[in-house]
Amino acid sequence: MRKVNDQDLMNPISPAVKELQQLLGESNVLWRPDDLRVYSYDGSNNMATPDLVVLPSTASQISRIIKLARRYNMAIVPRGSGTGLCGAITPIAGGIMIVFARMKQILNIDLENRTALVEPGVINLDVSTALAPYRYFYAPDPSSQAACSIGGNVANNSGGPHCLLYGVTANHVLGIEVVLEDGEIVWLGGAAPDEQGYDLVAAFIGSEGTLGIITKILVRIMPLPETTRTLLAVFNTIEQASRTVSGVIGAGIIPAAIEMIDGTTIRAVEAAYNIGLPLDADAVLLIEVDGPKAGIDELQQMLADFCIEYGARDVRIARNEQERADLWKARKTALGALGRLAPNYYIQDGVVPRSKLPYVLEQQDAIAKKYNVTIANVLHAGDGNLHPNILFDAREQGAYERVRQVGGEILKLCVKVGGTISGEHGVGIEKLDYMPLLFTPADLDAQARLRDAIAPTRILNPCKMLPQGSRCGEVTKSNLPSAIAGNTDVWI
Ligand SMILES: Cc1cc2nc3c(=O)[nH]c(=O)nc-3n(C[C@H](O)[C@H](O)[C@H](O)COP(=O)(O)OP(=O)(O)OC[C@H]3O[C@@H](n4cnc5c(N)ncnc54)[C@H](O)[C@@H]3O)c2cc1C
Image 1 (cartoon, rainbow, N blue to C red):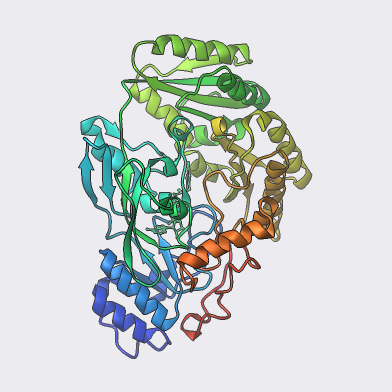
Image 2 (cartoon, rainbow, N blue to C red; image 1 turned 60 degrees about the horizontal axis):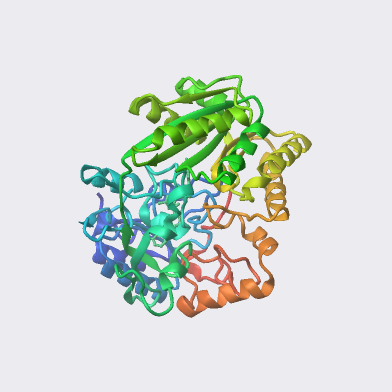
């Protein structure tokens, strides 16, 4: 790589670049516009370019980066794999983006204590892959698990299909090492079952990079279940499928996963992967149970009978690991397959009490008709977690504004029936406007005060998670200094 010289750096961030290059080496500091553009987006429709990207290898380097950022009054934006779906890494105030691509080691596997110590850049699926020879696994399994990082999972408190039975990320994190915004490196929590004092680990889980930079994570690991059964129940109406979900759980069976894929998504998945899903179905449920071999056949039969009783026209059971993998491929690649239907999609992530699913899906259909849009649904149905994907073409004038309105109406509907505005994707910048639907000004202020107690200068991922007006968004492009000026467009 060519050496940076003063001619290259005709902008106000050049002294910061030079200092960072000394700290990290030239190849670990990106500043050329073409390089920065790669880091300007996540999985949502938002984009903004950071001023600099750094790739540290250690917590102490991160500590020094933060101290430098404070000296130059630049924002810090931590970025995992960039698969987030709410603009939580969109650097709307510019600044230094910290990327964890050089921090991808599984540092320790401790079977006796059932823990693993990992760096934040470790890819979710790599943990279970490393544990497989010991017949252990890491339970939270976002559908993006082949790409997303554990650091991002912790900062978003991510869920996944099997979190119905096993619980979300928060239930599997025992301790974290974090770098605070004054550069101090601290451990929160630990391997002991009940740490005394305030549960600060819980405060960091789901904090979207606003409280500190997570540099090590001690996760709980679990023995693989002795056996697993996977069923595909085929329905002529989405209403039958959604009634089945609460029927099964109401009867006292908690499967490891109950996922729903609607007819529009089925047809996209089939066009892309030809897995053999029924093209004329309105919805399928993908149901998995696991546990000891004893009793699993009876459980599988009970589930199949339930589905038929609730209107399934067919129940298929995966006969081997390949068939099981194909069914999960249908679910986990569903979002990518939507590219067959439209150039863009706008995903929402509302949650409703699962018994309200039939009503909410019907109302959502009415919203789609009102705005003349197509919605493709994939749901963590067992958790009542909707993922309506509103299809659009960003090149069409006004299309993005329209799908955002549709998304807003769906979220309001979720809150109206006693649900919430995000099951797992987080708030980022996308849902800032909807936080007051859930929280009073006093609630939001209490959260802002917690953040200010831990990260008072607000240079860490500014303007995310807490809306303007609750002492949350004062660090913006207008009052951050010239170091970040002229680089803050948010667009689709
Ligand atoms: C196809 C697809 C399927 C998905 N399925 C699911 C699903 O089933 N369940 C689910 O929950 N989500 C899902 N997601 C959303 C996304 O994958 C998760 O939110 C994931 O946890 C993000 O991880 P990441 O590494 O990409 O983080 P990023 O998107 O890079 O960052 C997410 C947040 O974490 C912060 N962050 C990252 N690393 C650190 C760190 N070390 N310290 C402090 N803060 C940090 C960032 O600042 C940001 O606020 C899906 C996304 C896609 C594209």
